[in-house]
Every structure is written in C-alpha cells, then in structure tokens.
Length: 504
Image 1 (cartoon, rainbow, N blue to C red):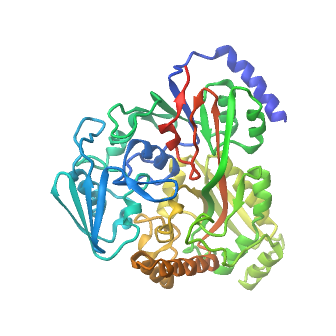
Image 2: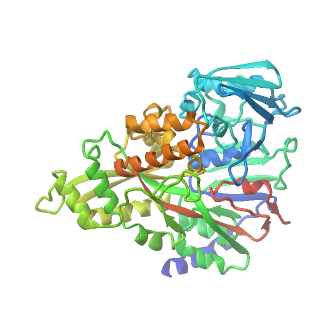
Image 3: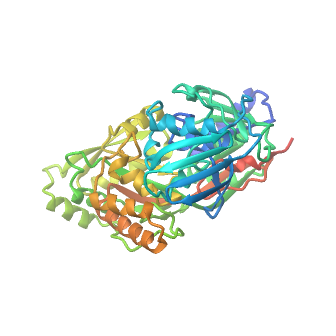
C-alpha cells in the first residue's frame, strides 16, 4: 500500500512536467532489449516476439498448432526424405527486394555452414542439401526423416532473411512481415512501423515503440500516467488490482503456456550429482511462490509441454515441497551441514528484470532452510544472457515462450547434439537413452510410438532434472482502453498487434 501511495505522489509530480506524445504511436513496455533481432540468432523472448512481427517463416501455425501457409502457399512431401515448398508470388522484403527461393537457401545455409553462428543450427541437422530449381520452388533433401522440420521452418521459429544477409544484419533487420524495422537503441527502445506492402493483412497500428523499462514499478507508473499503452506478463501482481481500478485501463487474462524453469549446470562439481538437483527441487515451495509473487496467476508444471499437448504426461517423478526430503538427499550425497548450518554455496545469475530478481530472492530464503547458501548475481540482460548461452553459470531461471509448445523442445534443450551454441542445452546435460528416444520420435511416422518415446523422455528428465519445471504463467495483458481488438495468445506472443487498433 505504501508503495502505491509513493507512486501516486510520483504520478502527481510527473504530470507537472509531462510532454505531449504522438498518440498514433503505440508505446509497448518491455522488460529488456532484444538480444539480437536477426531471426537466425535471437532466442530470447523479446527477440523472438519482435522478430515474429518483422519476419515470416515458410509456414505458420494456428491456435491448434496446425500448419498453415505463410511464405510458402503450398508444400508436399513426396517421400520421407524430400520436402518441396512452392513459394508465394509477389512478396517483397521491406526494402523492396523481391522474395525468391534464393533467400530461403541463404537463410538456412548461412546457419548450416557457420557463416552466421546460430543456436538454431542444430534444428536443421536433418537437412542434407537444398536446391532451388526456380525462383518459386525450394526442395529440402533430408538425411533422415524429421517430423519437426515444418515446426522449425514456421513463423516464430525462424524468419526468412534476404540473400547476402551477414553477421551485422541484426543492426538493421529486413523481413517480409506485417511490420518493418525503424530503429533500435540498446536498453532504450525498438521502433517498428506497419508494412503497407504486407502480403498478409496490413496492420491497423501505424507505429509501435517498444520502450525498455526493466523496473516493474516504473512500468506500472508509465501505464497509470498514460505514457505507456500496453504491457504483457511483466507487471508485479500486487499492482494489477490498482491498475484494474483505473477507468482508462483494461486487463486481459488467459491461461498460458509460458513455462518458468530453473536451469542447472550439470558440469558443475556440485550440481553433477542428481541427488543435489533433486534436493533443490524439493526445497522449492512452488505454491507459496505462485500465490505470493504471481498472485495465483500460474499453474504448477511437471513437464515443459503444456498439459493439453498430445505428448504431455503427468506420470513422472514429482518433487513437492519437502525440506526434510531435501535434507535427506543432501546428507546422502555427502553434504552435511557445517557448524553454521551451511552445506555449500551456489550462485544464481539473474538479469535486472524485477520478477526474476524477486524469484531469486525467495529461492535464496527457501534454499537456506535446507543448508544451501544461494549467492545472487544480477546483470543487465545482455550480459546475463551472454553468460547463459556460453554455459557460464551454476543456476539461472528463464521462461520458455512458445518453443515449448512442440515436443522437439526436448531435443533442442536437452539432447547431446544441441549443446550451446548449437542449441539450448546450456547446462551440457547428456543421456544416451534420451538421445535415442528423441531421435526415434523425430523420425517415426507412428504417432503412438512417438508418444511412448516422449512419455519416457519426460520420465527421464523428471528423474535427472537438468532443469526444474516450475509453473505455467497466465498471459496477462494490461492496456489502455484506446487500444482495442486485443486477443492475447497462450504463448504470450506480441502477435495481437497485427489485429489491434488504436483509437484517436
């Protein structure tokens, strides 16, 4: 309550010095700058969300995860090792260049050959070669069957870039999407504007400014005083009731698929012991965190996949909050308490994003109850994310946003072939049985066999715990009432901007 009294005072002061703003520009508040707006490279949430507005894949996915046309208006698979795409005619990049098959070849081959260093490279490991018999046709020749190639060629997973785009492309990205890039100031903002030549529906919004506001209280204040128009999944939960009471703001709340997870580096001398990782899981009081930090707007998770997915299973080992079990596991692993009650120290790296820093502070207290001293190190997001992708951590927490809606996330995050930077296996977890199951599921055409593979894979991961699944967070959008036609997605993407309208 005192915090909000202070905010009200600040609001009064701010109102005395506010400057007129361009009401045709939507101000979208985000927690951090995108790490890299090259869709071949950026894998953080801000990069992927903004890239999805600037770029198109060969295919798209609807709300039921079925594939629909995008830059390819049709495709066929004459045999398990051949995939033929027929490209949409008349599409142009934002700079006026015509989109052709050569751009598709360049996008995929620039990653496969290492011309551009990309964590997505391993996603195209099944590709043996590509050919373009003409400007409107692309043929993928595969080494082995790959059930996830379409997923990895879809909007959001990748975006097609112009032929010749090199390592500096992120500085001025050019795509074919509904919005086009205008400018970026690191740690300040990203500005995009509608693409009037979009091959799909042209957005109603003229311009969007993604303003970087890492402090959640400041973000709430920006919405209150009208200098920010919209924010998604980034506000403190105790602010929602205050914001909901304002007549000029509206809150959209829907069940989400974004999963918060705690990643552990299994190469670390302490964390390589599975009993230590299991003890950490037992030391986390998820229900308390969900209620206290997230206001109940989340559901506990036992798998990376959403519970509604055909491959999801709840038949896995579970680690409910149990400090006694955690202590027993640590004793068994040989880590008994010293005279001060501390068994050992761990370091958790975080970004300067407030909700993650708050989570880390709560984990510090909970771990302390079982004798684990958790040291916290906070960095600005770019530095933090660079350390994460290099594997320079003991522990960190992030969210999977959209990528966990397909079961190839298990391979991308945990298979031996996807060690970072070739994928997102940043903790260097390796299990040959898991690798074999995931390879079989990727190639098999039998859906029952694939589900059995994924069930067993989830059971292995639930025992080994290279990462601890915490919860699925609801998608919560707070926006000005002058912004209409807002339809949030469970993944928390920014795609609602494609249909949203801004009143005068």
